[in-house]
Image 1 (cartoon, rainbow, N blue to C red):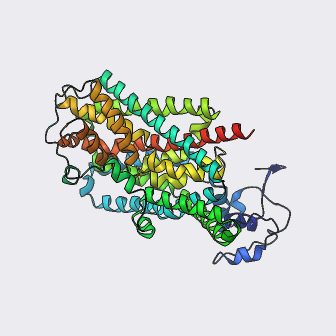
Image 2: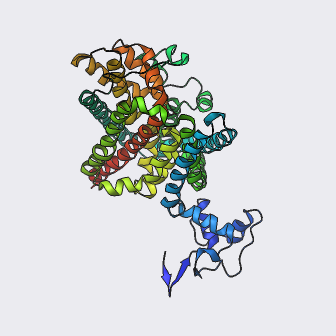
Image 3: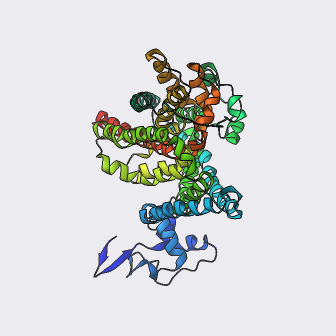
Length: 478
């Protein structure tokens, strides 16, 4: 922020409103904007062409201050507030667990608050994904779109295979399931009875028979397919589709405005979701599974703090510290929601604003990545499969572990971006090597906590792909 004689210079507040509305013209009518906010009175001498000087934000009327900070986005959600939310969530969760956990009257209030925050994020997912992909497809020629798709597909498959291989190496070194004594573990019936999808099913489900039904069910693979097809069709229609393109563009701007509003609640949402998770599980469930959790968390840490940042540095030209700092908001949101799909709006926001990824690239690869790029889930499934084998005294040879490598990769691609989706796709991995499905019950107690960490790695992989793709495109364009 510019300063003059120790006094901060804030832009004219109506211009800030116009930025929120998608109109960045400084000459826009300020009175119309002020009227669009119920109960908001325009401050005197505030809407001139020259910036108005204030010694601090506190001199702004409250409503103007909130909208100004919302528009700035990155400065509004301070990292200190997010860290405070994490600490409050952990402390509150421990207190809630000691007060009775799910049986406590306060647990229902905390769970409701967390559910409302996740619903706010999910509310904007479908319009954001549809508008993003259609806008990206209409802004590129079909040949360029195919190149982008090919590069990002190779990246997704390669990093997922690396993650699974890393998980297998760690579990073979640590042997977390050897000597494990776990009593009374039982897998839920819906997992035991679930029929794993075949490759043919995955191909068939790519095409929505009814796009409206796919929107209602939030079937991301079908939504992505429909949006890309619609975007390419609009691109080929040229000027005849001008009105529809303009509408989709405005829908995208509307979605991003709502995303910035939801970001305001991020510290509170993180606190509530952490409080619910810890209050429900407590610490006692971790003791018999400490070695298994260490193997999973160690693998996720190596992949998320070394492998992915190194790839972004070598292939994307961005230093690891800048990359990790830039996506911190998205990773914290992923940690609290355990859903890469729910985090998608925040991921798109931070890669564009913090990492300077062009909008046409982020709008293309981030929605696809949130659906098919699951490095953390793939690593977790590989470690879990070998842990279950060791706990049952089953020795898996090299050939069977190669089967785990490829089935865990395919299962992760087919996993939905929702909490604990990896438990359902793990059926594919266990059946591929002949392990009992009841083994899922052995790891069920700590799945929710591990899900939070593996979702962070999933989201980090999506953001890394956007940075790498940007660098590749820029080098080819020179």
